[in-house]
Length: 305
Image (cartoon, rainbow, N blue to C red; front, top):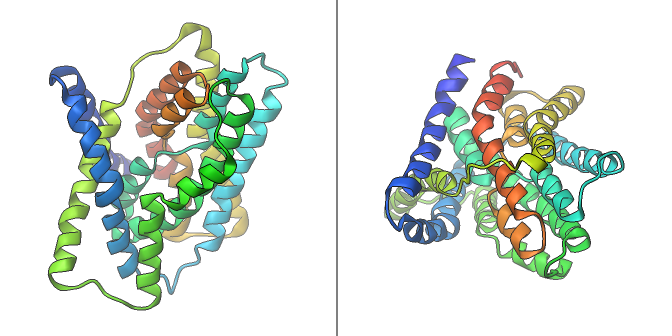
């Protein structure tokens, strides 16, 4: 467990540095706005393309691990809908609980995959990203369209936006290069390495810069509920499914890691755009991020798959 903690610790120290930069550096938000675009559209896609294209998947079965994360996400969604009959929450707060329970932070997921499992972890995380970004975004948009009180988005528009997602595009390019045995070599490969190296530190510091330390007392039960679902219940469900399916090794651990990472920061943007409770959403994102260093360490540190 100690080895897992020390592998995870640098990730969260980078998040802390990003948070401190927001406090102590004037107008730093301008820098992070530009940095996020580079990370999203260039650095992370290059990282995925390079590692997926060079990965050896001949001895691993990725189908069952992905099935486990899809299944656990759907189960959490069902739990959230059923619990609505027992807890009197407003529709906008319900959307934030839903997003908090099912969405994941791809930046933290890829970075932890790299830290814990190296280039194989990054390559496998790319497959999970390609599937799960589509599923969780469609689920979130459908819920926001029905329960949110702001502007609506069509499902077709959401799907079109996902088709343009740079992380998905990067993962697909990597898969195609890998499948056709096309290698990135020479100065182009070195360029991809330079760009890839910038992805992790900048993305994680940006996560920290976006944290809003707050806890709304009147919504503390809902915020705590969403946090427990995301950091504890979803990984435990995934572990049960993984064991039932008999999956082991790095693919199994990547599936569990996916389920254990905090909620995505862009859930706040969607909540604000589509009439969700964006204040509660900000709290869920912050507390899942802060507490995940403990939960991820405990969950992965005790797993022997």
